[in-house]
Image 1 (cartoon, rainbow, N blue to C red):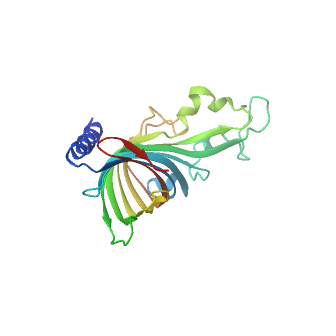
Image 2 (tube, rainbow, N blue to C red; image 1 turned 90 degrees about the horizontal axis):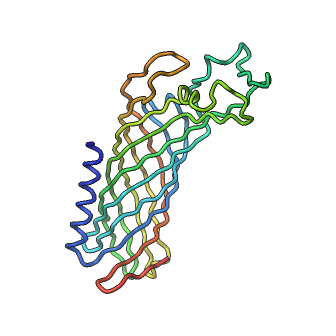
Image 3 (cartoon, one colour; image 1 turned 180 degrees about the horizontal axis):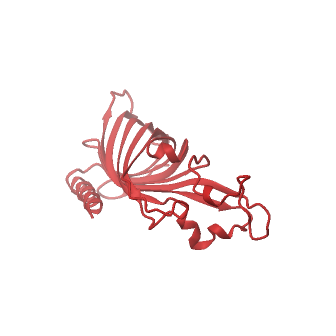
Length: 246
């Protein structure tokens, strides 16, 4: 409920500014990045990637912005092996056809929430606009180990059984961005690039982990820091109409 309340504050902040400042725009930031895990997250995953979209209100008069963010997290490198308890002496899992099951563990996750920030523009001799962009926000982080059974032969992880091994973890998180933002004079080239920082305060949501037969009640600190680039699709609004530049 506290997370929902904070997001509601961001919405109120953005709506209030929109009413006060004539110059305004809608930005849709389509982004891609690489993330380095830290803290407890580093014990479970290696380097992974992020992709997502940030819709936001931009208030040009004060160079302020507020909006939402959504990231899909994905990767192939999983350090933790929740299936160790059901492997044989050769390290394999026997499928229902009595052959070795081909199971590919992957990192999957999402983050979503709200953010506010400010652009500190540099002086320009033309109509282009660029500068240092700083933002911070909060939201929800979720991650798990996705167990892909290539031939669908491992009964041990079929349907709901797989949930007992996937280490699903959820919690609140904070995030920050520091980088540059550029918008050309004709508004055809618009992007941002910079460093992202995330701090998750998470815990397992599974009733029990099947491999350990224990309840994981630990409080986790899941960190991920990386580099991100975004293509900005702006809709600039005036009092009478809206013009779309792309």
